[in-house]
Length: 305
Image (cartoon, rainbow, N blue to C red; front, side, top):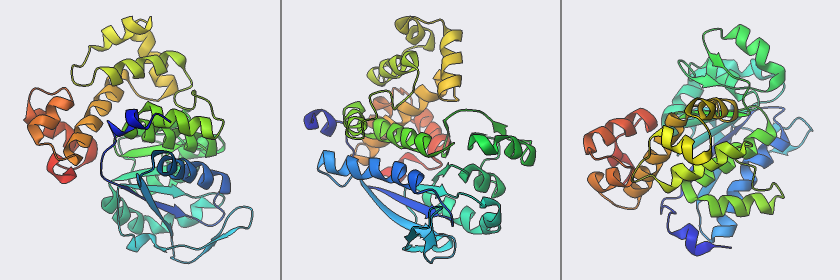
């Protein structure tokens, strides 16, 4: 374990994750979302993540295979945190009536991830307006018909600002591993992937995209033009954009921008000032950095100190 390499970039703040389970949720999806977080804590020797289980009504729920799981609270009374994961399964349409509770919870957590059929509940609650999303392949056509104004892509997972969606259990694992990699570095993410025999490709499945991400991560404080990143990976700018769209559902510029802002966020959480954090993110102008942080995270940089 390359713990020294990980500690260099690891923020001090413990991430609080709420997981809302709906009746007939997928055990596989829950395990794939939760076990990488548990492994991150175990392998790093630190409490990087804490989580709590919620349900729409606050009681226990049965999974799709009949496994009972007790909740620690009700969605509408959720304490809040950094990330809220939604895990509906079969019969998800019955739970769109909890839209007001979901909107309140989204405000308390900021970032919301809809796994499996979770995008349906997010869209019904108005949380995906103007954003791109994906959903389980079996639901894509009815989802597009029900929400014609949404941009629905056949991607495994999509991150669009503080709204994340994943199309199934395996995609949920990939999405959570991506979040761990971005926040705590590639070394820890690689060790987690190896622990679950997932291999190093459990980030983006496209090797060219993975190489481009590595270039981006190595040039956060002194950002490179996207054309230069494409050149270093042996692709044309258009070719790189197509591969990013197919693999991640986003443009290289959007992904790079968020990587930089995550670096600034980590700097703020480590106690650095706005000017220093802006420099860490490759911004010469602290005001521009603050505006970008608000757009990406919905909060001012000072919120993360």
